[in-house]
Length: 328
Image (cartoon, rainbow, N blue to C red; front, side, top):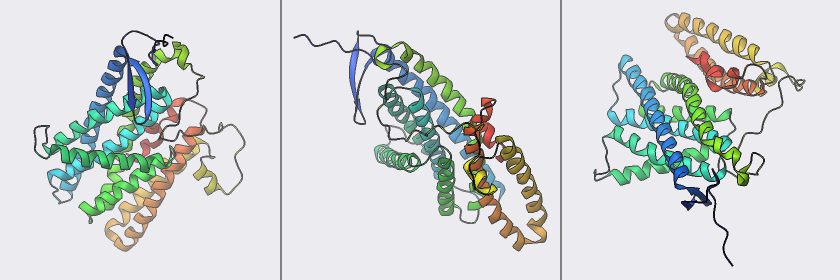
């Protein structure tokens, strides 16, 4: 009996189809679609590496302005840490935009493209003797971050990233770790706001062919992903849940304009003015207020993000750049 011909899961073509097995997923893609996914991953990887290096360069300059000089590996490894964060968020977007087979191919290609770009920051090329050892170390760390971030929802993954930055800076610059963590987090979240739009647009272009494929219609079920898909929140127009105001703010039940402009932007300005006033005149009070500010800082990241997910107005508010822009 003749076996049925395999079809590309992306476009439905039956010519030039190859079987692919990655991360325990078996899929079939035609050569053209495989090339489309690989080229798209290469473009996104270039953007991720470039923007991660940009943030790392800003932090290196910041430490120099504070009278501390850190060596080249510091610059490279902080770029790695930021790139790992961007990679994970890109993978979440790919999970939402693509069917399982194309997503796995895109995500694996993305990692394969990013890692050599990051290793070049250490002056390593494929011809370097220790290239493979360092590459394996980078991949191992990347996989570890994927597991850490994958256990979080879309809001608290940012808090986990900030915690990871704090751990890193405590080791390399203990006297500046609080300052570097705050600056690095603010820079990285702002950069991701711009980068996320570029990734989303590229994934939307890739996904268009899926809509016409009978094998993978918009209603077809997807297999489980190692990255948990956030559960869509209820619309913000529904009645808020009970609880005190702080609890409602934390859950995202407070309307986004009040959360963003009042508790985010407005209170942040007040904190900044008070910290500036006490930095020299009252150093003990300054240290205490700074600790309070950092706790407030993390709290508001989650509150604004959750509130933006419930927002039903202009969708510009629903993305991370708008929600987190007050941290600049």
